[in-house]
Amino acid sequence: MSILEALKGHQGMMPERYKQMTTVEMEQRVVALKEKFGNRLLIPGHHYQKDEVIQFADITGDSLQLAEQSALNTEAEYIVFCGVHFMAETADMLTSERQTVILPDMRAGCSMADMADMMQTERAWSELQSLFGDTLLPLTYVNSTAEIKAFVGRNGGATVTSSNAKQVVDWALKQKQRILFLPDQHLGRNTAYDLGIGLEQMAVWDPHENRLLTEQDPETIKVILWKGHCSVHEKFTVENVMRQRELDREVRIIVHPECSHEVVQLADCAGSTKFIIETIRKSAPGSKWAVGTEMNLVQRIIREHPEQHIVSLNPDMCPCLTMNRIDLPHLLWSLEQIEQGSPVGIVKVPSHIQREAVLALDKMLHIV
Image 1 (cartoon, rainbow, N blue to C red):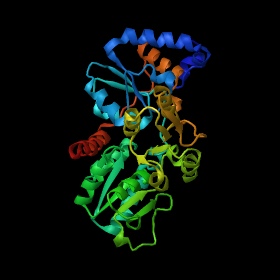
Image 2 (image 1 turned 135 degrees about the vertical axis):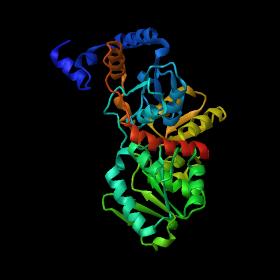
Image 3 (image 1 turned 90 degrees about the horizontal axis):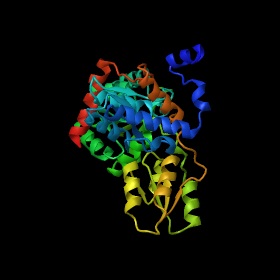
Image 4 (image 1 turned 180 degrees about the vertical axis):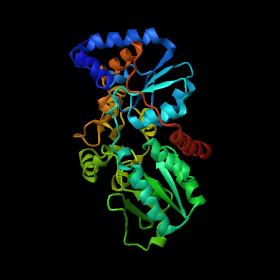
């Protein structure tokens, strides 16, 4: 290994030589390393990962599900989390001190999670407290940084998932008159609407302008939505829905609740990734589906269900770019660094942040 490669490895940058290896070489090496580590290694793989990575996953699922299963696997010393940064943070917070969580590429972030930072959130909370007093409870989607989870835990709130958002929002509105929902406005809006809260009772908080975007009397507002979104799911449009309806009247449209309110209302059904997978799995052979979620997953569902007619709701959709940063070369590199005794990409949440973030996670688990 050259000095340049050594420096790159130390700084968390994958050496160029991995890009020059053949796929077969890399796959054989990963198989050998998995056999060598045995139960000392666990590779969780998020549903949105590439097939070249997911083929080596010991468990697959949504972000919180993977973190919880990682915590249950007490034998694993190394958890090589194939997902994005906030997911690895949650896995680190739920696993023990003797376990090391590694993200194969530290550039694998989440644009939605990055739309709410602590400076913006503390500033917003101060303004909202001035406006609404002690009538507000914060909630955050698990697709958020550990710092945001800690803020929510510190202020008595809880995390939510796309599967349990209705239960947690319903609980929160019984605790306080209003909620602040971070960082995905679409999940917050769709969830509150399903619980019978009118759009006129919701307002968006713009963290860049540091103000509430509404013409309503603030006293009528029950749900304050952070101005954030998923860059993948926001690309599904009303035009996509109408086009699929025109192409085939028998097609059923199923979307993730991170899609816009207009798209969710036009769809036949909406739900979490698990809901989408299970709904299609249980449907009759020959049924027709247009699926509004991440492309890697849609393509996998298509291959796994040849007995059905499945397409992406948006045929021009690209996979999640940050999820795609985890690829076979980075997975192999991270495993070889562990083998050499110098792991890179270690994700470690500071203890003071972890304590408060776990409060929010625990509260959610208690509610549901």
